[in-house]
Length: 514
Picture 1 (tube, rainbow, N blue to C red):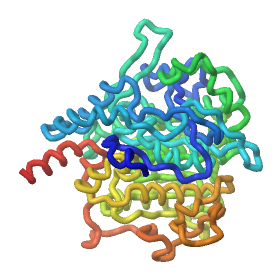
Picture 2: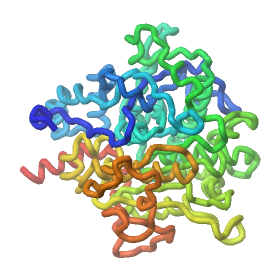
Picture 3: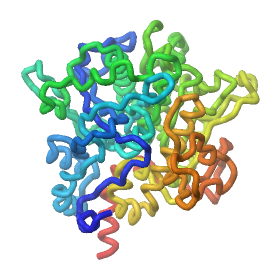
């Protein structure tokens, strides 16, 4: 770190630790160019495009500038974040001084860089889809997505237009109104009929988007021309950045695409994977599917028991809806194979570990079936871990960008290390699923003084070990449900599921110091 870096007040990201440089392309494709993934019409009349950012291994000579973490129009995005945080007097003052710094935060990726030729045996890059939580966006998990990309994974990060972003802008160049704005939809976190119905509607949109994005990836790999109307691409000189990915994405063989998400994004991926895998169950009494792909659709063939699924701080309330209770009670698809939960990973923050009701629901969702419903009784269960002294925001960019908030308000520590542990575990789960990714670096292994590991290790077995203290502060959990135990706190509370109460927390902190 240079002296200039030390005195620069602008928050910044740490470097990625994988062997590859990371490129990024902003993508927004009109839905009219994509095949509808389901048997019904679009659930959202505003869904005229789907939006996502792609993080990918880039050529080493790439020298393009980074990507602004706050996308355009920046003032409106920052204002929407302030509203999302419930800006009281303290937060209003904070956002009055921070925007000038926020505008200059840059994701350390190479904008529109040329993709690297894959060194893998298949000559294709493995692919992951990553779904964001409430208050997230296609940029809000850039460090974990970029970390994975630096290890040889093409990560596709959708921006959901379901009202879960603080604000999202839909480019509609063919319409009179060139840009449509989708604002945040505030829904209570307490369970009720109205809440379940609202979350069902959001999930319906999210699942539809994931289906469309999967079709977009197939078309990109097959070199089918697609119009990219993303704001970032308007100054690219007309260059089609999507064609460089043709025939380089490992997305055709069943079970090859990995699916991951944080919080509401974790719930989204559970619902998506199960909706696709159990798509034939359309006549089950009381079950009202939120997404039903066509029998002959590519996504039905893609999702199999070998599909890697990775859930970061899974928030279970959105999938507790009575309308989808039948689906919730079905085992994860991995348990339809003798390999069981070897490709199923759940990483909690310590805050969510202490939230006993959500923890129990998480365990129920990821546990292997027992009794008569167990097809393979001896199969392994899931991988479940949590890093100590971590908060819900530790798994997003907010932890590494604003450590003073997560430390003071939530007691979180070592935000950069927490994300490295997350990335290590996710990469090893992909290796276990026979997906070829780069070795875990010596730096990530925290073995700087050990000789002979300059290129890292191809199998990072310690990170998924259930042996106590195999990795410092990385706690392995079983699937046993907790009762009303005194050693397990009730957790962060419903209102702390995301950052919505952050403004009030900071305000309370300010008043207590006055």
